Amino acid sequence: MIGAVAGVVALVGGVFTGVSTAASTTGAPTSGAYRIVNGASGLCLTVPGASGSDGVQLTVSACNGASNQTWTLAAQGSGVRLTAGNSGKCAGVTGASTSAGKAVQQETCTGATSQTWELTTSGANYQVVNANSDKCLNTKDNSTSSGALVQQNSCDSVATKQWTLQPAGSTGTPTSTPTSTPTSNPTPPSGWPSPNGSQAVTSTISVSGTVDGNLRRYYASSAMGDGGQSESQKPIFELANGATLKNVIIGSPGADGIHCLGSCTLQNVWWEDVGEDAATLLGSSSSQVMTIDGGGARSASDKVFQHNGPGTMVIRNFQVDNFGKLYRACGNCTNSYQRHVQMSNIVATYPGKALAGINTNWGDTARFSNITIKNDPNHKMIVCLKYKGVPKGSEPTEIGSGADGTNCLYSASDIHYQ
Image (cartoon, rainbow, N blue to C red; front, side, top):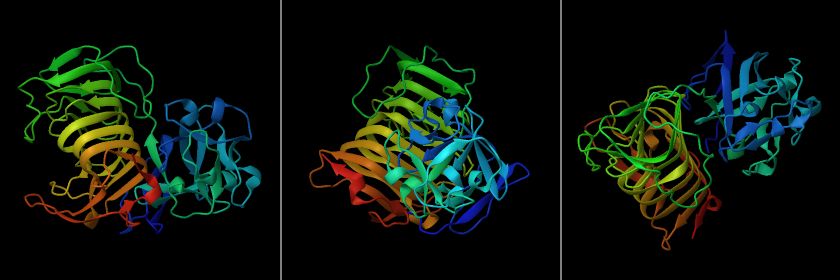
C-alpha cells in the first residue's frame, strides 16, 4: 500500500486540480457525476434502497449505474460536497461527530463541514477525508462484502479506505453491429457461457455509448489477423472514451482483441482463445479507468490484458486459465507512464506465469484481493512480477516479485489456493 499521502485535490473554478508531487502523478477528476468505487472490493458507494430520507446510512454494493450510486461533486469549503443522484441529499457524518466508527449517511445539504470531503491522492486512488473530523471514508470492520455499512475511521493505508472515482457513464446510441435486449449483470466466476450465434468480423467495429452483444461470438477474418503474436493485427472492437461493451464472446482467431481509447467498461466479455492480447488500454489521460467486470479468458500464450497508456485498470469477478500474464503494464512503449491495476475476485487456473507484471521504476502499483489460484500445488504462479521499464527498442528485465507494501500490494490472506 502507498504509505504516504501524496497530495490534496482541490476544486477551483469548477475543475479539480491535483497538487503534484513525486509520489503521485495520478490525474485529478473533473467536477460532475461519478461512481465512488471502493479500492478493496470494487463495490460502489450506495444509498440503500434508493431512499430519499435523511439519516440513511450509506453502504457499498455491486456497481450497476443506478442513480443511488451516482454522486455529484461540487466545491464546498475546503473540499467538495457529495450529492446523491437519487435524492439530492449530501453525504455527511451523523451528528457531525469527530469520532471513529460513526456512520456516514445522507442528509439534507447544509454546507456544514461534516458534509465537506477532501480528496487526497493515495497511489492510484483517493482517500475521502471528512473536513470536520479529518477521518477517512471506510467500510465497517474493513468489510469487502456487498451491503457493508459505510463509516468514518482514522486514515491509514488499509485498502477499504481507498476509493476510485469513475465518471458516471451515459447510455449512448450504439454505432456498431451487436444490439439486442440487455442481459443480466455479470456474476462472480462460475463457468463459461455458450455463444448465441457467431459472426466473422472483417473490419474493426467501433463502439460508443453502451453496446450489448447478447453473448454472440465475434471472430476475426484472415484480413484482421490470425490470433498469433504479431503486433500488426487489428482489434475486433475499438471502444471510444466512455464506452461500454457487454455480453460478448471473442472467438478464434481473436486478432488483437479489444482496444480501449480512454475510460471504458468491459462487462461479461469472454475470450475463448486469446489472440495477441485480449484487450489493450490506450488513451493518454492519467485519470482514465478501464474496468473489466465479469467474464473470462483462456489460452493466452503471452498477455491477457495489456496496459499501454496511463491510468488504472480494474479487473474483477474474472476467471482465467492457461495464460502467460493476466496483466502487463507495458515496459517498453513509446511513452513511459505510471500505470496501476486493481484485481479482485479472480479465479486463475494454472498453468499461468503471473497475475500481474509491473514496472516498479516508473511507480506502477498492483493491488490484489480475494484471489483464488487453482491446480498449482507448488505455488509456481507469481502474483506480482516486477520489471525495470526501459525505452522503446529495448527489453525490460525482471527484477523481483512478491508483496512489498509499495508497488505489489497484498497480504497472504488475499491469496487462496485450491
